Image (tube, rainbow, N blue to C red; front, side, top):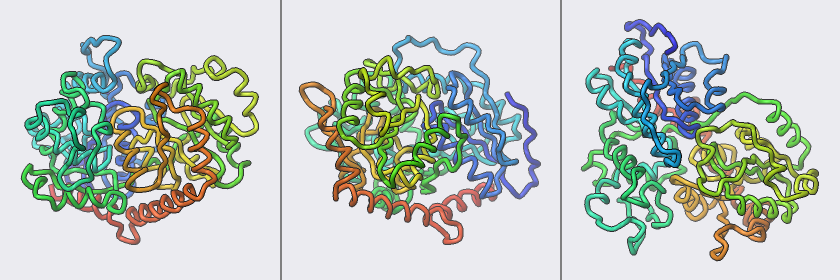
Length: 482
């Protein structure tokens, strides 16, 4: 473990520890929070890094030499006797076991740090509650998904107790108190089969949510007004009782290291017309089947639209295949793309292997649409920069996010799956790409995305006493009071 001398107890600035679970979708938002606490709110922050099975992207992110002076990365070494899991263990179950194995020394780590004023955990690190109760350290949870999924998670123990059948077999949508109904086909993947270990882990973490001293939500009131109002006012959440919620988002990456391939990508963008490029990137862990990847390639080519494609080798078994090796650049697109695709599209397309400077691409004036898996981090980044989306959910809660973005918020288009082939056809891909770049509907989505971008900037503004900025101020004041 990296050595670090914690600040003296008499300092007016609180020392807090931040603990993410593995996976870039969790590491990045808690890293953003840690940086914000250190730079804007005067906190001393110890970022606890689980190093077991760390991906190349994780190592690169957390080894940045340009950290704020009050932010320190504390490496948690791999467990000496990790749980032996079968090779076909699903990603979420594997993640939960890694956390379970590697938090055995959490008590000694927190004592070595001088007992921080608070510990901020990821939603899948709830093992920390027992440890921190013993040490009298308050635990705050940073919910890295939507407020809508947070509300569903609070309701899940009730569903588990009252409903006997599988949730996917319910005749009507799930009606979370005060929130928009959720179609059963849009439920988070981890609750679609109540007999498997993934469900048991998700239920366990959900039942522990009320143990938090406070809940930090990576959203803002203009983006999820109905859900945030429900959590605040609906009697159900008072009865649980739900922890006090603090919408502090959207917290996204403000800077990131630019590799040579990233620099080449941005240089290519500089030479494209405004709002003409479709950015195709399916998150830190997403993979397509070979058949679907082929359809995507043909659809992009048939559309004739400019594109950037962050491409990975296909996987016919697991859409989360890249979850633990994101940043691996061993892909060779020539081995899995249609023959001649690279040559035929060289004037309108640009390919990157595995990883891209996503925020830099999204904020670029040439980017006209974001073809995304609808993970929450990517969704927040797209809305922050006012870019409409092609919604392409793969796993976790992404189907739920996609439906909300397309149907409730009106900033995304969802391609239709061909029921006979089980894939989105090249003709459908051509249609949605053309729609979002060239049609009046696409212009309307872009207008709505820009309105959300403006509201996000206001929410985070210190000079305008933005709602999200003030929420985080209140949390820091609580830590100072402790």
